[in-house]
Image (cartoon, rainbow, N blue to C red):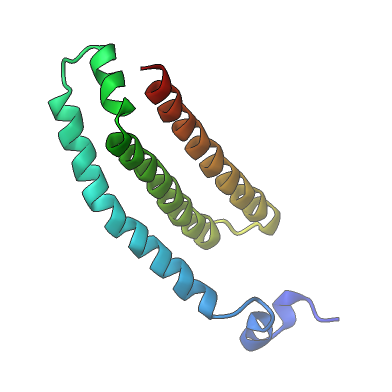
Length: 129
């Protein structure tokens, strides 16, 4: 059996997945970026409007369905967009296969955990506020 270094570039590329996978990744990253523009603008305006407000006012704001929903969408889109971007960096710049695989798993798990924690915080504030 030939080692990967002894194979031709075509031989190394065969069996590494469909070329269509990159297009889906690219589109997902562009769509989340587009979704983040209005969500981030809304969030900045909301934070500016709430500057200096105390905790009950903030909790009441999150307690309304629209801000809570938009905050959850912001967290999900940000987490997914960040995970996609970091995945590209890891795949492009980490040469060791075992380390790359480990970092990709950590990236996915961390993005899921952070998104769930953010959603939990919003739900908790909205129901207790």
